[in-house]
Image 1 (cartoon, rainbow, N blue to C red):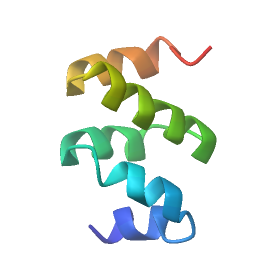
Image 2 (cartoon, rainbow, N blue to C red; image 1 turned 90 degrees about the horizontal axis):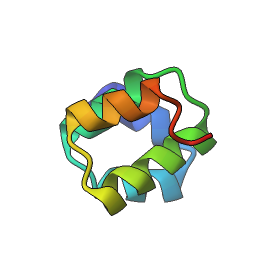
Image 3 (cartoon, helix red, strand yellow; image 1 turned 45 degrees about the vertical axis):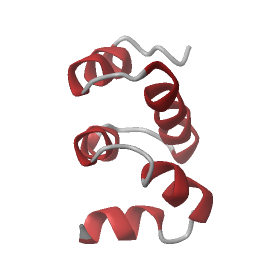
Length: 66
């Protein structure tokens, strides 16, 4: 939880988006080597498409944002 707060403490918009996802999805996004812009992209995509943890991991690995 501390890492979650520290990650988004200076990014209130991302914090708001992160709070709309499940904890497991947030952990996947936080543990991935992503910029804040890409974190935002994956948060929005996960919410929009209803990606599960496995789907989110696969999409990050496949660089779905490109």
